Length: 411
Image (tube, rainbow, N blue to C red):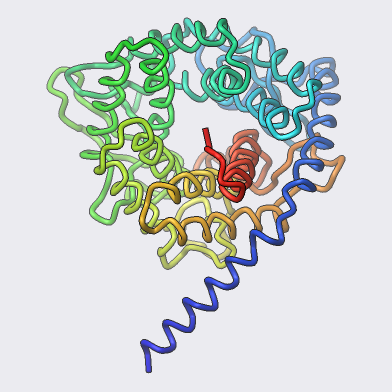
């Protein structure tokens, strides 16, 4: 009897999730995204003129630089950041996605304009966020227009990122000048490996690939718990390579599962499998996906709370950015895994719910597309606000869903 009930529930859930994709009209969503992005393009010069400051999450050395990219809203005001901010590459990437979908050269022109503002980061060796900044902008652009200069910027950036690799620890150091840690490595850093893998493909130089594999393997060994949830920050002894601390900086507690961190891991190991075809990365991605989607606190609308273990659930902030990253990753994972149909259904459900319940009204929120993301709840920073990386991964997920439906390559 119990088995019959369970199978019925699975069948009903499957039917519901299959219908989600049909309810998302991608053409309409991208048309709305174009309208919102035009609003944002009009708001950026206004924010500069009124002195909107890059006061949130700025990388060291960012003060006094030109403000080049919208990041979030603060009390209704558009917050801009310099190229040194880790989020600076997402808005150029969003513009490239609009060009990819529409083929409209207006978006190509804007994408090139905002991408150029990120180029100075190719020599910035005091941050690990080279992939977020450069690959989401120049990398996305290079995939679409095959520009030789973009290729040079990608390779130069990979060389810069490689200088942060420590062979003693086997990982790329994430942050400098942090009193709490000596050699911190965050789960987010998995996302920057795409730049290194791509650099090997572009140059034939295997050193980038080897660094990426070392980082992925060491992170797999040390960052994850037995249930395949991950810590946010690990600290390493730079000489012995031993782990000295395991903490969760942006989640509820050191032993909790910060939702965006789980999404970074899912996306990162799926991407590692794309470049290496190493089965252990595929298995890791599948196990992370199982932790996320089968967790007792995974919401009915599939948009995670900021932390899976937050004590006030269901009255905790959601994180639409974590949902968008997860959906995009699951679409890619669906083409590699034997569980592909299930992953695609879940991704469809996430996209449907983000589209129907988490989008901004047209013309509002200074042009951001998604609402209700959470940057860092423990710091009371960027809680229940739009964030540029939520918009970026949401559009990427939509593009991937369309390509899968049309049986076209994702990359």
